[in-house]
Image (cartoon, rainbow, N blue to C red; front, side):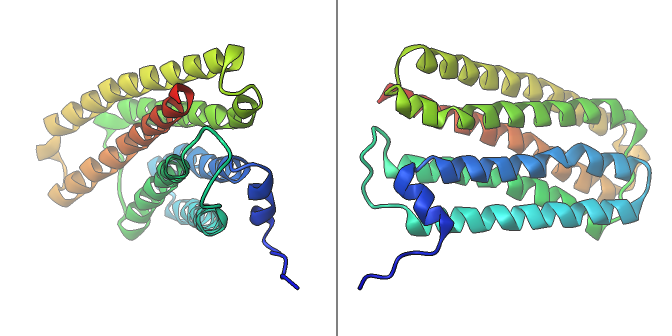
Length: 228
Protein backbone atom coordinates (compact mmCIF):
# COMPACT_ATOMS: atom_id res chain seq x y z
CA UNK A 1 0.00 0.00 0.00
CA UNK A 2 1.31 3.48 -0.89
CA UNK A 3 1.31 5.83 2.07
CA UNK A 4 -0.66 9.01 1.51
CA UNK A 5 1.02 12.30 2.36
CA UNK A 6 -0.29 13.99 5.51
CA UNK A 7 1.17 17.32 4.44
CA UNK A 8 -1.73 19.72 3.67
CA UNK A 9 0.43 21.57 1.15
CA UNK A 10 0.83 18.38 -0.86
CA UNK A 11 -2.95 18.27 -1.22
CA UNK A 12 -3.03 21.88 -2.32
CA UNK A 13 -0.39 21.22 -4.95
CA UNK A 14 -2.45 18.39 -6.45
CA UNK A 15 -5.27 20.90 -6.94
CA UNK A 16 -3.27 23.97 -7.96
CA UNK A 17 0.43 24.89 -7.79
CA UNK A 18 -0.64 28.47 -7.04
CA UNK A 19 -2.48 27.88 -3.75
CA UNK A 20 0.71 27.47 -1.66
CA UNK A 21 2.26 30.49 -3.41
CA UNK A 22 -0.77 32.54 -2.40
CA UNK A 23 -0.62 31.19 1.16
CA UNK A 24 3.09 32.02 1.27
CA UNK A 25 2.53 35.58 0.01
CA UNK A 26 -0.15 36.25 2.59
CA UNK A 27 2.31 35.27 5.31
CA UNK A 28 5.01 37.43 3.74
CA UNK A 29 2.66 40.41 3.58
CA UNK A 30 1.79 39.96 7.26
CA UNK A 31 5.50 40.38 7.86
CA UNK A 32 5.69 43.54 5.72
CA UNK A 33 2.70 45.07 7.52
CA UNK A 34 4.69 45.10 10.77
CA UNK A 35 7.44 47.32 9.32
CA UNK A 36 5.78 50.72 10.04
CA UNK A 37 4.96 49.65 13.61
CA UNK A 38 8.58 48.58 14.07
CA UNK A 39 9.83 52.03 13.09
CA UNK A 40 7.12 53.78 15.14
CA UNK A 41 8.42 51.95 18.20
CA UNK A 42 11.97 52.90 17.24
CA UNK A 43 11.02 56.56 16.86
CA UNK A 44 9.34 56.43 20.28
CA UNK A 45 12.57 54.89 21.63
CA UNK A 46 10.58 51.97 23.01
CA UNK A 47 13.18 49.24 22.64
CA UNK A 48 11.03 46.66 24.41
CA UNK A 49 8.31 47.15 21.81
CA UNK A 50 10.92 46.98 19.05
CA UNK A 51 11.97 43.59 20.43
CA UNK A 52 8.36 42.37 20.59
CA UNK A 53 7.60 43.35 17.01
CA UNK A 54 10.91 41.88 15.83
CA UNK A 55 9.94 38.57 17.48
CA UNK A 56 6.63 38.55 15.58
CA UNK A 57 8.48 39.28 12.34
CA UNK A 58 10.90 36.41 13.04
CA UNK A 59 7.99 34.02 13.67
CA UNK A 60 6.28 35.00 10.41
CA UNK A 61 9.53 34.74 8.46
CA UNK A 62 10.03 31.24 9.86
CA UNK A 63 6.46 30.33 8.87
CA UNK A 64 7.09 31.58 5.34
CA UNK A 65 10.29 29.52 5.15
CA UNK A 66 8.36 26.39 6.15
CA UNK A 67 5.75 27.00 3.45
CA UNK A 68 8.47 27.61 0.86
CA UNK A 69 10.37 24.43 1.82
CA UNK A 70 7.23 22.27 1.72
CA UNK A 71 6.32 23.77 -1.64
CA UNK A 72 9.69 22.92 -3.16
CA UNK A 73 9.63 19.42 -1.68
CA UNK A 74 6.11 18.57 -2.88
CA UNK A 75 6.10 20.32 -6.22
CA UNK A 76 5.66 17.91 -9.15
CA UNK A 77 8.51 17.66 -11.65
CA UNK A 78 6.07 18.39 -14.45
CA UNK A 79 3.01 20.62 -14.48
CA UNK A 80 0.04 20.46 -16.83
CA UNK A 81 -0.01 24.26 -17.01
CA UNK A 82 1.38 26.93 -19.34
CA UNK A 83 3.87 27.80 -16.57
CA UNK A 84 7.39 26.45 -16.11
CA UNK A 85 8.26 24.85 -12.81
CA UNK A 86 11.40 26.97 -12.52
CA UNK A 87 9.34 30.14 -12.97
CA UNK A 88 7.08 29.18 -10.06
CA UNK A 89 10.12 28.44 -7.89
CA UNK A 90 11.63 31.77 -8.88
CA UNK A 91 8.38 33.55 -7.97
CA UNK A 92 8.23 32.07 -4.48
CA UNK A 93 11.94 32.89 -4.05
CA UNK A 94 11.21 36.57 -4.76
CA UNK A 95 8.32 36.51 -2.30
CA UNK A 96 10.52 34.95 0.35
CA UNK A 97 13.14 37.65 -0.19
CA UNK A 98 10.59 40.23 1.02
CA UNK A 99 10.25 38.49 4.38
CA UNK A 100 14.02 37.95 4.60
CA UNK A 101 14.60 41.67 4.09
CA UNK A 102 12.13 42.63 6.82
CA UNK A 103 13.81 40.22 9.22
CA UNK A 104 17.27 41.64 8.43
CA UNK A 105 16.01 45.13 9.25
CA UNK A 106 14.44 43.97 12.52
CA UNK A 107 17.64 42.17 13.49
CA UNK A 108 19.67 45.36 13.05
CA UNK A 109 17.20 47.29 15.20
CA UNK A 110 17.34 44.69 17.98
CA UNK A 111 21.11 44.18 17.94
CA UNK A 112 21.83 47.90 18.16
CA UNK A 113 19.84 50.67 19.81
CA UNK A 114 19.20 53.09 16.94
CA UNK A 115 17.78 56.61 16.93
CA UNK A 116 15.88 57.89 13.89
CA UNK A 117 17.68 61.03 12.65
CA UNK A 118 15.12 63.84 12.57
CA UNK A 119 16.34 64.92 9.12
CA UNK A 120 15.24 61.64 7.48
CA UNK A 121 12.09 60.96 9.54
CA UNK A 122 9.61 62.33 6.95
CA UNK A 123 11.36 60.66 4.02
CA UNK A 124 11.64 57.38 5.92
CA UNK A 125 7.91 57.45 6.65
CA UNK A 126 7.21 58.00 2.94
CA UNK A 127 9.51 55.10 2.10
CA UNK A 128 7.77 52.79 4.56
CA UNK A 129 4.30 53.73 3.27
CA UNK A 130 5.41 53.10 -0.29
CA UNK A 131 6.94 49.77 0.67
CA UNK A 132 3.74 48.52 2.31
CA UNK A 133 1.71 49.77 -0.65
CA UNK A 134 3.81 48.03 -3.31
CA UNK A 135 3.84 44.83 -1.23
CA UNK A 136 0.05 44.93 -1.08
CA UNK A 137 -0.06 45.44 -4.85
CA UNK A 138 2.16 42.36 -5.22
CA UNK A 139 -0.14 40.37 -2.93
CA UNK A 140 -3.16 41.41 -4.99
CA UNK A 141 -1.42 40.21 -8.16
CA UNK A 142 -0.67 36.82 -6.63
CA UNK A 143 -4.28 36.43 -5.50
CA UNK A 144 -5.31 36.63 -9.18
CA UNK A 145 -3.23 33.61 -10.26
CA UNK A 146 -6.01 31.03 -9.91
CA UNK A 147 -8.42 33.14 -11.92
CA UNK A 148 -5.77 33.58 -14.61
CA UNK A 149 -5.45 29.80 -14.93
CA UNK A 150 -9.23 29.44 -15.01
CA UNK A 151 -9.49 31.73 -18.05
CA UNK A 152 -6.38 30.34 -19.74
CA UNK A 153 -4.16 33.37 -19.12
CA UNK A 154 -6.27 35.45 -21.51
CA UNK A 155 -9.21 37.82 -21.77
CA UNK A 156 -10.22 40.49 -19.28
CA UNK A 157 -8.35 38.80 -16.42
CA UNK A 158 -5.14 38.94 -18.48
CA UNK A 159 -5.70 42.68 -19.02
CA UNK A 160 -6.51 43.20 -15.34
CA UNK A 161 -3.26 41.59 -14.17
CA UNK A 162 -1.29 43.46 -16.84
CA UNK A 163 -2.58 46.72 -15.35
CA UNK A 164 -1.54 45.50 -11.89
CA UNK A 165 1.94 44.74 -13.17
CA UNK A 166 2.20 48.25 -14.61
CA UNK A 167 1.08 49.64 -11.25
CA UNK A 168 3.80 47.75 -9.39
CA UNK A 169 6.45 49.02 -11.79
CA UNK A 170 5.25 52.59 -11.39
CA UNK A 171 5.29 52.24 -7.61
CA UNK A 172 8.83 50.85 -7.70
CA UNK A 173 9.94 53.86 -9.78
CA UNK A 174 8.35 56.25 -7.25
CA UNK A 175 9.98 54.44 -4.33
CA UNK A 176 13.35 54.74 -6.06
CA UNK A 177 12.93 58.51 -6.13
CA UNK A 178 12.06 58.60 -2.42
CA UNK A 179 15.02 56.32 -1.71
CA UNK A 180 17.44 58.67 -3.44
CA UNK A 181 16.04 61.64 -1.51
CA UNK A 182 16.42 59.88 1.84
CA UNK A 183 19.99 58.83 1.02
CA UNK A 184 20.90 62.38 -0.04
CA UNK A 185 19.40 63.77 3.16
CA UNK A 186 21.29 61.26 5.28
CA UNK A 187 24.50 62.15 3.46
CA UNK A 188 23.93 65.84 4.19
CA UNK A 189 23.80 65.25 7.98
CA UNK A 190 26.39 62.47 8.22
CA UNK A 191 28.87 64.59 10.16
CA UNK A 192 26.29 65.30 12.87
CA UNK A 193 25.73 61.61 13.58
CA UNK A 194 27.65 58.69 15.05
CA UNK A 195 29.62 57.12 12.15
CA UNK A 196 28.60 53.56 13.06
CA UNK A 197 24.93 54.55 13.20
CA UNK A 198 25.26 56.22 9.80
CA UNK A 199 26.62 52.98 8.35
CA UNK A 200 23.69 51.02 9.78
CA UNK A 201 21.16 53.58 8.52
CA UNK A 202 22.48 53.26 4.99
CA UNK A 203 22.12 49.49 5.33
CA UNK A 204 18.56 49.77 6.66
CA UNK A 205 17.53 52.14 3.87
CA UNK A 206 19.08 49.78 1.31
CA UNK A 207 17.15 46.81 2.71
CA UNK A 208 13.87 48.75 2.59
CA UNK A 209 14.59 49.65 -1.03
CA UNK A 210 15.29 46.01 -1.88
CA UNK A 211 11.73 45.08 -0.89
CA UNK A 212 10.27 47.10 -3.76
CA UNK A 213 12.86 45.60 -6.11
CA UNK A 214 11.68 42.10 -5.22
CA UNK A 215 8.04 43.17 -5.69
CA UNK A 216 8.93 44.40 -9.18
CA UNK A 217 10.72 41.09 -9.87
CA UNK A 218 7.48 39.32 -8.92
CA UNK A 219 5.62 41.47 -11.45
CA UNK A 220 8.18 40.52 -14.09
CA UNK A 221 7.62 36.82 -13.32
CA UNK A 222 3.88 37.22 -13.77
CA UNK A 223 4.49 39.00 -17.05
CA UNK A 224 6.39 35.89 -18.18
CA UNK A 225 3.33 33.79 -17.32
CA UNK A 226 1.12 36.07 -19.41
CA UNK A 227 3.42 35.99 -22.40
CA UNK A 228 3.58 32.18 -22.69
